[in-house]
Length: 580
Image (cartoon, rainbow, N blue to C red; front, side, top):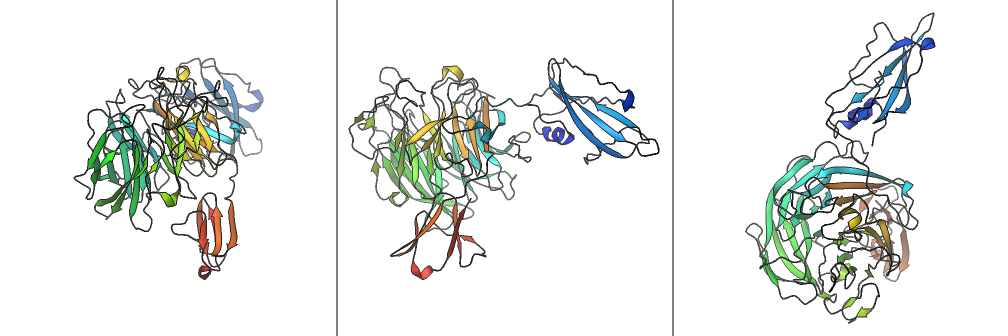
């Protein structure tokens, strides 16, 4: 998309549209004899028009000797046969007894060997969704299989890439993107932060100064941030998995939270899926580490796990390997509720028994409440308990039932399909009302297809409180492959499309990241306080709870606070607020 002309826009382009040749033509004539003329440039190169004026501190002077005075500029957009162009009129008011007006025409700057980033291949949609409430941009393009994403402390974006043609035969890297202008387009080329990783990288999380990253059936690598935002990461240790022959539904997802009651420690969550489509698993997988003390144990398939990682500054150690969930076919996406601390995760449904493209059971959304995590092994029912695809029939009925299942929408028989759930994330809190308290879920769809050949690959918005969901980004759109990497920041949702044409075996340079930013005033958190027999009960639906004994502050976060929070009488009076 051509940006608004102007020297500022030209300079902003420099990050991702390298300029190799600039041609500028000036003409100065008295205004009363000037006749406007439309210039046409039927060239194949993209074009950018800009204006030089002294109001921009760019170190460039206009080539008019003896002229001074006040300068202004007026845009006059015109379009050529081949490329968008524009003409700026630069007016010079010359001081003196006889004021004459001179007009300088800044014609065009041609950019050779570079093209503007393409427009996103989708618009957002759904019940009550106004596309005008969002600014959707191609944040980065030309990537090799981007998937995992995390926000770094300085607000820049960290992403996994797997370099190579075939996703399953690649080498992994972590790259950092910066958007200094805030326009939703990353600057220049990404900075490589760490590159000694195996391929098929799928997930990354940042906690404190530690970075956790993994790929399908690959080690969980633990890295450390540098001293400055642009300093490369350093290796700390890894957790190694000894898979037997075959790695069907290997671990691929990560999530972290601060370890309750422990300083400089993190609880790390991951899954080990089933070893077959529709049967109880027999596979076990030993884990170990030569670099992280305390890593030892044997994992059981169909499960979700937690392990605690303590950061000692120069090294880390591990403890408390715990199986927290069973009966899970492949829980490949985790997210903590930002206020309650409950753990939400998806589970992939059973593939079709006759036609693998028609599932036997739909994908699910499940939950373990914060206070129950690790208390016991909750069984979610696979393989004997499930919901039948399309009909909604419940088979078995034992185990923990799902919060939601994702049948075709809006009609389970004729509606749009969503299959192969991957990453999930809670919505940006500053998204418009109705889209700011639920979750987004990315669906892979058909394994190696995209565009019109993939009718199963939407990004879904789901509200666990109501049980309602819809397709926020519709599947089966040209240019949309596997939009399964998700990251939510305060006001933006980042969506990583693994390979925009869908072909995992020939996808070098075909990955992209999109930013969907809210353009509406944010809704404040819902904060409620009521008296109880034990003190007061504080509830909030998003953001961080802060407190102080006077409204003047200084306000400070309440440590380890989750909604609802009971404050005993001896800690009163206090003032509370919630914000994000």
